[in-house]
Amino acid sequence: MTKLFYKDKPIIGLDISNTGIKIMAIDTKRWLVLGYGSVDLEPIKVKEALEGDSTYLADSIKDLIKEKLIGALSGNHVVIGVPTAKSFSRTFTLPPSAEKNLRDAVEIEVDQYIPIPASTLYIDYEIIERNKQELTVLMSAVSRVIIDNCVKAAESAGLRVIAVEPGISAVGRLLGVAEDGDLPSVIVDIGPASTDIAVLVGGSIRVTGGLAIGGNTFTLDIARKLNVTLENAHQLKVLNGLSAGPRQEKITNALNPSFERIITETRKVMRYYNERLSDDRKLEQLLVVGSGSNLPGIGEYFTNSLVMPARVASPWQKLDFGKLPEPVKQFRARYITVAGLASVAPGSIWK
Image (tube, rainbow, N blue to C red; front, side, top):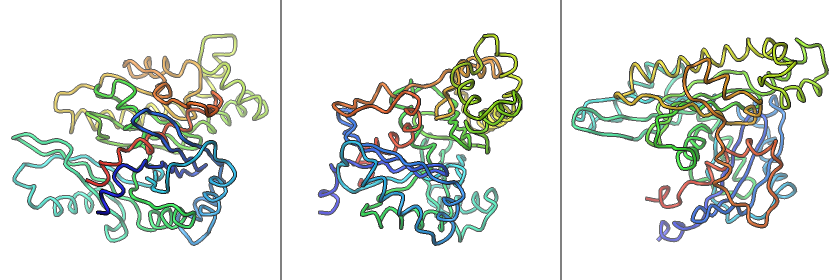
């Protein structure tokens, strides 16, 4: 009865990151946005709330729903997205005969590759592909303290948590339906303070990586190198970026050290996929998303650096805001993760 009762209820996405919280409800039959909103957070206070007993997250969610919501929520069932950098995801292969002892195999992977004790983690896994030769297993793990604090914060705001996943998995879900998701793809999700990198194949994230560089880092780089205010640096970033023009050389020189680190991490993720997981499926495109993707010329930069077709993804067209005012253009990218969370099919949760 419980499953039938909840099965067709729309699911709300709740994206919790180090710099903000976003919420969104979507009618996925029509891709109609019913309600959305966001609130900016202080990273230090977020860290305290994720790892301690601060009520900062709970208070911020309540404030978001009460004061910052545009439209309406469709219920109170939420899927929470946690910062990808706080999670561990791995894909590995096993012989079909290992399926009956799958949990044991997952525990071995956790012990070998995750640098914190398994007893402190929530661990989940699923078989995402199978053939006669092997099973492909996706495993994710997140600190119990972080999950418990996120769930507690959401519940204190009157929400009922039905699933939790790394933010990059939600991004992959949305890109899978909106951006030629059948092509093996590299995703580079540039947030305000960090960048998440992943390989998406067949609708599933296969490998992830990341580093603490984001859009705010780019602004600081330009401000320091060109000796301008942060406000002027932000304008130079979003208006000129890496595109050809009189200031291109100075801005590119300012941004190069940070971008080289992102390129290095992206190559590492691609190499891991190509050497261990590719099964002869070659990576065909790179999609840049996130609030830090608003630099003119960023697609060309990745194309030239990695010799791979790259572009800024625009899954935005998939969403219909109906009579609701859309977020202004410069803030749209920040809603991609939460839209992916809100696009979970209710039936997939309850089956």
